[in-house]
Length: 461
Image 1 (cartoon, rainbow, N blue to C red):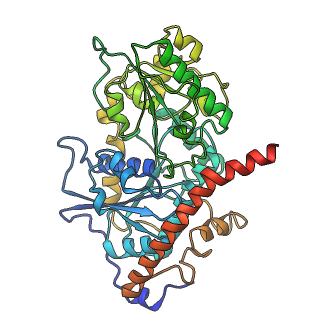
Image 2 (cartoon, helix red, strand yellow):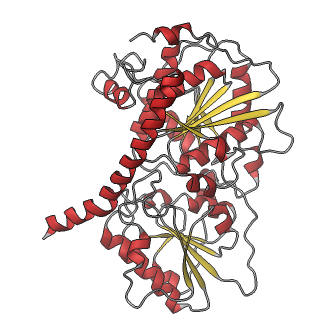
Image 3 (cartoon, rainbow, N blue to C red):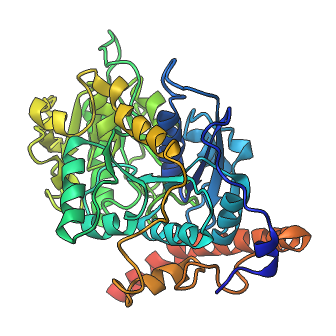
């Protein structure tokens, strides 16, 4: 469908490689991906490295409207990302495309789930701008599932960032294996690694369990992990034991959390011991006081390893692809609560570490050099060719249209009728949508976290 008359009449601004300010837009769809996207933008621009930025940088924050759109509290707890959370705004797909058309960004970072990345790539291609921005995407953490699916949905971006040497090799193998151009794969690192190296402090002994919203999924498994963590606190009364939580009940993260640990903790027999606490907030601040990080497969393990904090990956529920802890095979970190209760502190395998991008060897300062150079080269190359994703109506006619429709785009990448809103009418409609959406989101969360578990339990009777 061609753009509306208003769209066609609007002047399309174009990025200017030689202007004073480098303008970057970050589009994210969850709290974690916002953190990844904003920090990636800073790394790519050099704003996060002292003296590395060649010119002033302006980063605009956009949140793609959906079930996991972060709340103001979640944005605040992400930590320092160099973008004022108060200036981050929600957009629909059509509003995002209109913004890119009008704002002349130099770089667009798509910090989204794979299907959304693919939709935005097709939407940006359909804009057919005389000079389009550089499009960058990647993964927020460990890639342990849907490797081929996720990668091919990200194909078409100018740069697909790999968080490690091993990921870079895997990504290229997938693209080359289907005959897709693999030149976009660019090795970098997780952008949120940092902090001071771990140093033991006299009188401090803190164990942190990094919880995950969807791993494990069952009530029995989550209750087991919580029980073992509480028992560990009781076995070691002089040790501070913290359960690090991603969100409060009712908030959504990158993954749906149907069984919040907060609810399960209310039912622990005998209550919680005095040296056991539930904590929220920025992971980096929690790691500042951590002496042992325990998790099933959280990306927090990579943050911990980067700081050389003793880190344990639990095998209690098995080492399985469904849990993601299979990613840590060969790391030397896989162990059980029984061993941790007995005082074990796993030692990481150095060769495994070198391939995972945690840069514990001091190379993190240069991890984004190649990516920054590639962005600069693309910006100075003149008008870029039209985005060319692997999935097209010809290569995936039974798959692509459904993905695009999910984000209110037609098969040609243009917004579907009724998807766009502009001017004063659009603002009024937007305010109404915001009110309705907030009510619907609350109802949805109530259904996911309250009603659905009850229905499942009834089905088991």
